[in-house]
Image (cartoon, rainbow, N blue to C red; front, side, top):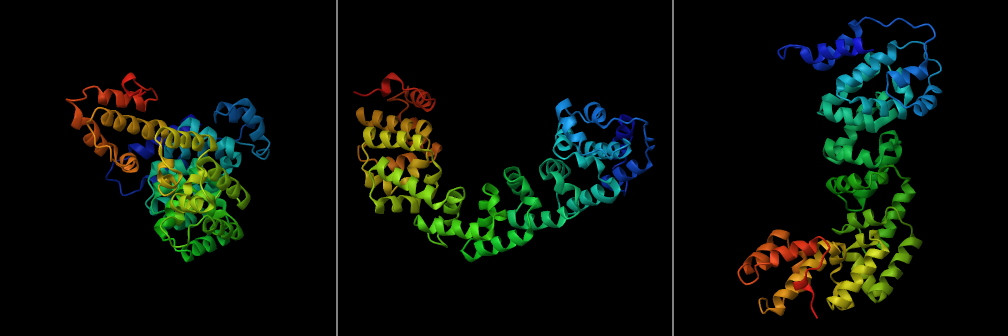
Length: 385
């Protein structure tokens, strides 16, 4: 195995850069020309998986049950060398084999070579292909992966977005296109652009592979929380309701109503403007409610009309900026009419320039105290009585 891999890698990476033969062709040629490994009498698959592929004993026992037909290391050796040539580390190769032991039986020239060639033709780099091998699993040993990748590239917009989506939903490539394409068409009918769908599916790729009835139910749930089709928040609403059903959404809405002392109308206003509130944990919502209502003194209606605040970090933004501005007001350095919402939603750079650096002389410790508060501690100067 080591001799074969060394031979292939040497031919792949040591050939002159002026050679008209592509790296993939050199790889296939090397695999074909390398001395064949003769069948070994008493070849033990389990030992091969441990000693050559790097699997643990437990993994090897499980994997060997799917390779009872394997009598020689010649084909697995070629596959391992090919994967190493693509740039997969030994640990990554071991993970591929443990996940799909039959990968060792795939023909390099008949299947893996054409697949890699097709993916390269789509503009996917060698490092991205090596990541795709790990993510795609069984799908990578079928030539049909190439047209599927072509379709998803046009949908996701880039190979990086696609790989991110596959990381979240590895079975996307094995999904039936008879499900995927109608779902995409329906989302477009709902007012989502291809760009919107790409952003949505990068975070929630399972939507594409869901049953069409399920996607329609998601759309109904999004509309049910007050976000109409075609609105700019519709994509975010689908993101929020994807793992939920009507009962869970109703329960979360009731929790919001109780926690923030909102009316039914105010709950709907808040969700229509920030549907991702549905994804925030109850504990986090409770702590933010207590801080905004009790300490900052904001009215329920004020919060309902500005629910974006609830998606901001309590420890990293809401508290630190409140303490800074309160300190400035207490010391006569800031007009008391400043709106809290406008303060917490400006960028960090603008906040630093406007509320910290501007007061370096009058409040030399302000930057240090602000940084301390962002770490979750409250300095003495920010403890007001």
